Length: 323
Image 1 (cartoon, rainbow, N blue to C red):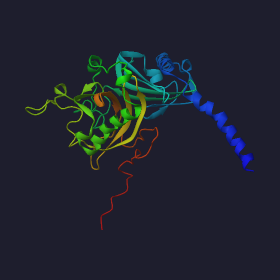
Image 2: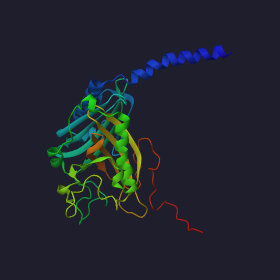
Image 3: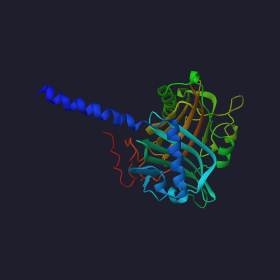
Image 4: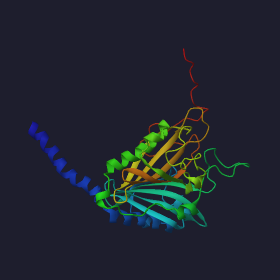
């Protein structure tokens, strides 16, 4: 009886192995071609022009949209700053840069997943001029809470490079170094972050570090960098961390996560994509595209979902007094 049961299992293993292998048969050239096909289809407003899987799923700032709506209608072209990063191990590719929506630019990260030469997922993180920011939507006294500077992003773009093999770290090391940044944020201790002195960070194109960001440092000290100013940082948790694209040739990592604020802080959460560029075992540059969802919006709307479904204050249970 043992033999009769073992035969189907062996046959199943023999049949299923090629199927799993086929899901990752898209190399760097294939991923780039597929990503470009997808972007071109969006610009043409024609989902049929992209190799979409029958169960294709797409989100825009964590909201599910059906093909033909959302960016399929609004995006009219790619902007002046364009980068593409590729990860044949995960079967994913991503675009970071500017897209045009008519006469208006937006700064985006676009992630696609390719399985069996079909696009199964697309995730857009979009920053637009005038979007809600830390303090919510624009008001009569506050034009916009978000920062947005596509011109600065164009003038100071991410590296476009192929790092020599001898100088490359493994994908596991690249992710670990990236993760040190978020550990530094949540512990409010910049010394945990594995970064070069003077590491730069641009948020929606705006410089957030150095003298250009108004962080010149105290007298006799260097300008603030990506490890500085964390003592009063309002995020208590960097939740639902994901690293979907690790481009080993470029030594670049895409991280997507959610900043969950400390209890009592009224500023909004933000959902972000951040691109980390790593040299000599340390972070050199960080580029982000992010948005600030309303309090009751489920984010990130991609797994893992844990810790990212906060209730609005009106539904939250009252705090219990300590005995």
